[in-house]
Amino acid sequence: METADGGARVWRVSIETGGWQEKNDIFVEITLGVGGEIFRRTREDFVQEVERFRAHYLEGEGPIFALYETVQALRDAAKAEGRHLTPKEQALIRGIRQRTFVMFEEQLRAAGDPGADPDLSAGPSR
Image 1 (cartoon, helix red, strand yellow):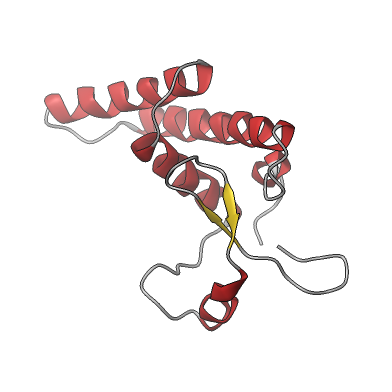
Image 2: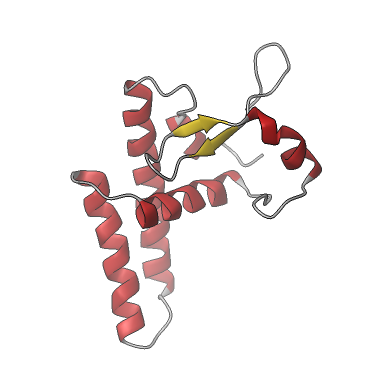
């Protein structure tokens, strides 16, 4: 994330909380595109990947986790039927993940997480 003074802050999603941990020490790795965990993503793909990660690693109660379960149920049904997700199912999953990203980020922001940005899912890709 760009800072007001022209610098940058680097955030990494936490496997324990789904929140953001400042990881400025990986700035060079990211900007030079080296290392095993660095991938270039559009903003939309970033949102999808973060939500896929959160749904996989986190457990909890409430509307966000109910939506994660809905996505998993769609994926499980397609797998049980031995088929790929339909375009309609894929679009539904992308929409649910975009919504859960905003919901999760709003909760993080309310809790004081400085890396939270619910508006990230709404803007154009960078």
